[in-house]
Length: 316
Image (cartoon, rainbow, N blue to C red; front, side):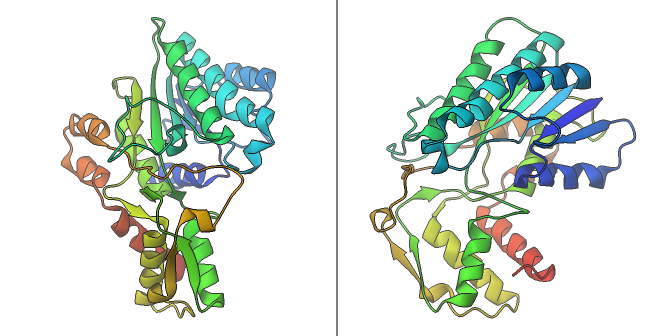
């Protein structure tokens, strides 16, 4: 079994490495790939890398994620977020491999009431969302022709893990300032990179690293529940206080503001909530209740555990 993990330096890539390292399988060759090993914006380099590596499983945790910079760096954003996934899909379809690709709530415009389902039409607002939507469409097109491969596009949102992210920024600012103002009218689901890596593993692999058969398509992959950026900030601050971290701005000092008071170059969807019934059904079919329970974990429980780990590691 050969596994390629693209995006080794990102939060999800690091979560996969931590997960795989904990399993100590000698039957599997895993290669973690960053830009130094393979520049995803260069199609020829990527194709050559895939042919030489001969992966059975491609995990594309890499992406151009600079939402605001994408408005001006259009070409490179499309190369990494759309063309590279297409080439990975072409390899998987031709060689009978499995592709796990990660997408985003930004493929939606955020105007829907309630939770988005996988079949809802894409209507991205900014360049970042347009590139990720194009990547999804390219993968679907490749696999629409009969082939021996399989794929899952896992749409997720508000990811945090080992690296820079919203939670760590809020906690840093809360130690420096007596009051914070955070957007309270954008809704979504914070997603732990470790949670997402484990869910992905459960969908695609068994405990012996044998590939599972699953229905190819898009899956919404976020923990249970919903919140706003303001709600996330307040919970993170309270979680830090609960484990003994002194903050200048406690949860009550984090004030709600509308998005219009914090303008950014790229538009954001107001509603990023995504229904996960399809993913839960796929995990349930495995027949292991512990895997289903992991899939159903609440976003707030995941955030509290994450903040506690940050405190334990001296990172707050």
